[in-house]
Length: 125
Image (tube, rainbow, N blue to C red; front, top):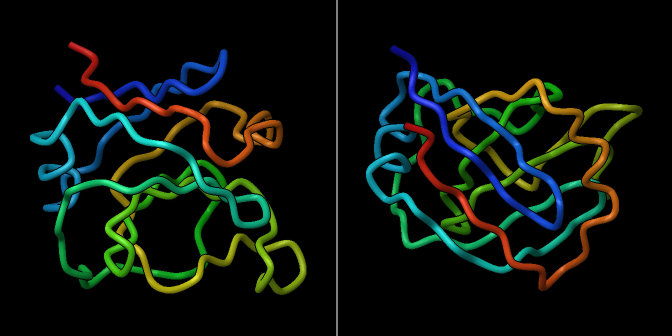
């Protein structure tokens, strides 16, 4: 059975489906995570205590709905539109990240999130 987690921020509850990567396993084993948000264009990221290296499939341009871990910043990132370094309409992150989950939630709703808001990631059992 596929593992799922819940990301809670403001009045949003985002259900994400974890993939089978090492990053997803390490994040799952670290849940729950409670942190404060940072924003960078149409990206939310938040610090964690997780330490995972770049995986072979890491990338800096992600698809809408992909949830990533940013090894450089030890952070989870949710891109939902243009960032300051995007070309055209792509979701380009600051550097390569490991995709660990995916959601069908309309992430464009997160445009109202500002830095400093509490964000929680927990297991869905």
